[in-house]
Length: 458
Image (cartoon, rainbow, N blue to C red; front, side):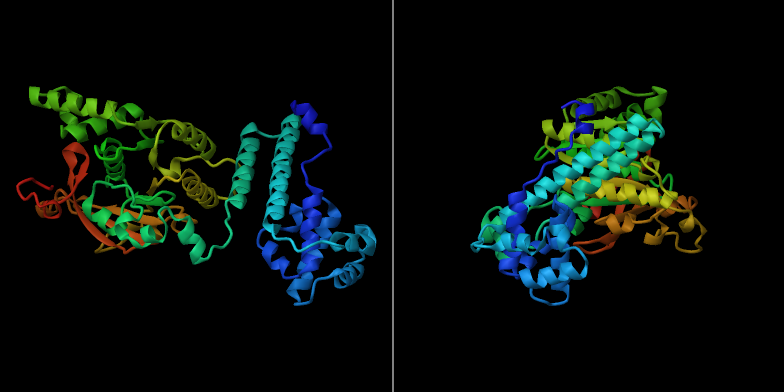
């Protein structure tokens, strides 16, 4: 259908029979209202009279009164709406001779489906009208469309309540697999042993916020995880890295040097020996063959990320999404302040991770508060910059902290780092000690964690 045809077409998707059957079922047995109230709203009905009938049913239910044709007619009469719904005769026709409906959920689903189609058309129609009006910035229109469609998706993703029997029945492998810890779904390994022990790995649909002050190494840490996920010989998965600060060439340089354990300064200066050149070639071959994808579009927005990830997911097994970093993303639409914009972005990323069933590792800046505190400079959740709902939306929040940045004269602190797991919905919090190899911009496990005492910081 052409755009202009759509703009003037008066017909909209509906199923009046399904709507009448739902309303009639409630009048036949008012307990049916509880069955549909958590799913349907008055606006889900296409006819205005059906909306009014359902709304009055809800008011009767809230007062604890029985819902039938008499009480409903009386309620509509008090509101001056009985004639607008075609009177008592129409109410009688809804449940007259109607048998007990055992497939009421199917009719509810049909009503909900048609309502979603009408809302999609409404958003599209509004967009068309605004585009023809030529009175707004196209970016503002695009932002409004993005926000509207994401809200529609959020509404549709709400699932009904499930009892234990349904949960176990739908679980892959049934009750035996559900109770067998060895068969429970595990997250994706980060390559950092203590972090994997505390979190169980990065799990699909979870938003992991990694924050730090500048020069602490948050990009390096994220790239170390990305490289591990994409090149893991046992279970390599596709990784998408969206870099809003560094070019893709700079990121690849970091990845190659970190993988080969070659000093970046020597690499840039060209002072490499034969052993280092060989290590770089091996690292490059390893990365070239891996399903690692980098995007360095500046100021990228949610819609762009979503469309790129959907295409990537259609071709590869998407295992991890890295975004560096949140405060550089652009929110489309109008916001009263930057806090609201960041909150909308974090919420959008959380919804996207659930839809794509992939963990999102999102980097974030911290405020200057850690530097102004005396004594302990370790960051706190309250230090999240322009936090808004970042802490609320995140399933995990971790901070990178290196004391040597604040005390460069103390030799015993060099190369030591902490990962502070400040929030975890489904597990413990605490501090993890790591090694930071500054020459390679690389974090590694400590020797005590791996049992390799002869290897420095491993």
